[in-house]
Image 1 (spheres, rainbow, N blue to C red):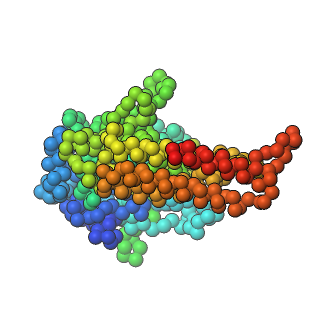
Image 2: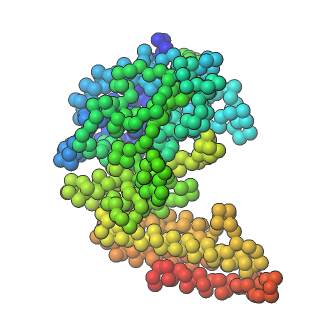
Image 3: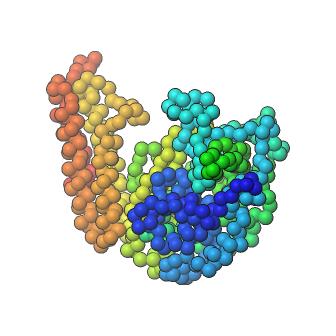
Length: 526
């Protein structure tokens, strides 16, 4: 790769939002100007998570060290900026390993090849792009005509692959002794693929990096980012346990070699070699910072007692707040919050952070299909989260829990009402996993109301009683409006009801509506 060069330290490749405008920044600029950058761009949430976990956060932590106490963490927070001297020195000393096409190309294996010297289209690195023999069905581009990625785009795609790549069969590296028939089997997804990722976000990129910085009392001297491992990577892989946070964040779940070429004088990447990488034997709950956890009821011998909480397709993130808010594990619950949100609760309780911090959380996950060999859906959301809600005994927390419980009760009431209307019209209820049911549609109506409620309690937590009253009023109005829409769409005969085969008259629409209104009022306690 001698004729090619792309320095991640100096060249712009990180998409950010700065003063409300999209821009590209280099690694040096992103860290030194983090306090002036609004946020990382979330146009591609998989890449956003990968850039933060694989480069920005470990580079900052390796340059400045992990904070070992709450006082040290607060000192960094109060500083408002990331330490420029340490960052400049660090990136200067390690500039060579941040070259995408250097002697030791960043995140890649020099000379990585398969036994047949095959390369694949670079679309293999892009989760949202169809690959394989049948892509022309829904895509204009075929395997023989791969996209051309700029070095910046290729970097982001490669990082996202390390975090989210699909599982199953991978090409075998020529120097991998575990290869069978030119392939490796049993590959898990990338590490983030097993998580329901939760990223706390601050008012700017500097705050976001600090909010994602765990306090580590003791660290392993072998806990290093992949670019400082001291061992040149090869195509061979192994199962291993993370040595600590930096090792985990930069975990090399795949072996990669980008194949650069010049088109019209510009460096592009159209082909790639992608083979199996290291496999995590067990994910440590006290190290992984970006997921909530759920207790396993009956773990098998040798299996962990907790598992990451995954996000659910089609469910707004506020409906999954229960595990996020479980910052103080209790015997009555089987979930616990992420390491970072639990830490924010402790920092708030000790006076290092105030309740007025406009905290947001970004939730990201991937739903895989066909033995996790394909990506079916990407789940992503941004949610305002009042700091007061992290305290288990706060009034704000109680309001949020009430809202979640009542919204779920209204969802069930709406679905039952929809089933009754179908019976009244002579039909059959929809299966629970088929179609778009009335109660599920109602949850989408609640989405705007709940987000406004969370934002209001974030700014004025003392007005929690008014927030609860506003929720009840809005929920009642939306529930009645949903019923009116449903009633206007049924045939007139549904108001008379139907007679079943046994000669019994089924529920009429009028009776079903009365039952629904009663269920709504009971759920809301009014």
